Image (cartoon, rainbow, N blue to C red):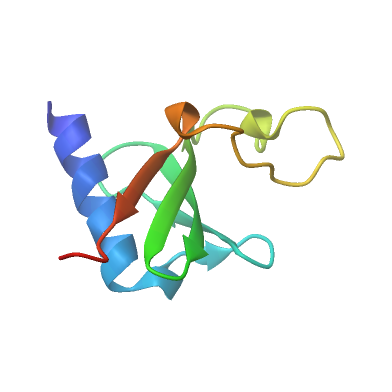
Length: 89
């Protein structure tokens, strides 16, 4: 439960200040979670933050990217990504 609360808080922080994370590629950023050894990889789009991965820091860097040499790819469907849309908030 603590992990999910921290994850929600960090994603909310990304929405409040989208450029807080370290830039990885043109539109992708990485935010290090404070209390857990995970990075949140996300993409900024107009009024939403799309989480691409929640990656453990002790695994091989970029393991969630897929085949070596590929750039960051977004999931084909919303089932693999969390989308926080605050347009109506």
